[in-house]
Length: 436
Ligand SMILES: [Fe+2]
Ligand SMILES: [Fe+2]
Image 1 (cartoon, protein in one colour):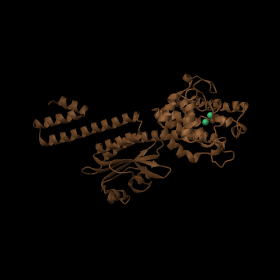
Image 2: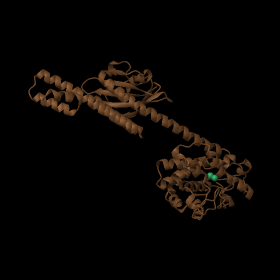
Image 3: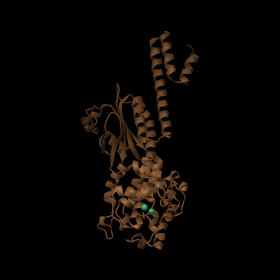
């Protein structure tokens, strides 16, 4: 083994270096030198491995789609790297002023107030705590150990901070095998904790935006439904039925989200329909019906003001096509079947399903079998047969959903509500005039 070979190994600390060191030792180096060589090689090896793991995790962060899976992997990798028995990642729940264990290797979910115990203290102060013996520390809360039967000894707890320095969560490793956590362990945890903080902060921002978006479109739907007692809860119910039908057609993920948003907003244009037409108990004359029909166009017009995320751009179009018919005799555009978005055909079926199963001023709630009979008559010229096949397949689920949603129906005691005795199909239910 030459000196040149040694320098090479120093430049590239890896497992091959360790093997070469062992070979050198076997070749008869003095004991002290050999031990020193082994120690150095161990340090080089662990530094190289640590860097590998840190880089690997950071790379995964770039492609994070599932935060829980990522954090879980991160906790496992960290525990392995630091020789810890367990690792827990706590996230702060600001609404409840609590910490909860989003990932807890080897333990169930734990929740406790910020400020309590070691993790709670780290969440409060933002300072790392490294203690060799938890039970010798007055801040230690032995409750989780008592409940799980686990015995905590050494503990390294690190705050995960967001961009603005606010603590987002706490990264904790427990029970170092064969000793306590070192200064070098603290540094490793600091790098991994910083990566975890980026992931948590991004996920929280995305979740917040999603909640804002979802609550905004729900508010729009509630506002329009509140204009008229007879359609109370209609948008929410159509959304649930559309979701059941969509799933029965094999839809998932973004397609389903798009469908739900369109269903929620399909009647938004009714916000511009005058009360005298919207709330008229009896039959609408032709002029009134023309006016009423404008709501589908208005839906498109109003929603054009909302900047939808790129993958949701079709929502206003789907929403505004919910009164189009397969034979081209629908409104507002009289589109032919092939130009009607499949999502709009699903919303159309869900819309009619709710108009028939829920009570209205001019009709009582029809049972599901009568509803299906009426919808069967509309299949072909009005409703898409493919969508109706999905409705049939999903019938048990739809029936359960109707039962669940009954409390959202307009109250039968409201003035102008129909009774079961007047169950004859009114002209308003007959195609194309189903007022939904
Ligand atoms: Fe509707
Ligand atoms: Fe409508």
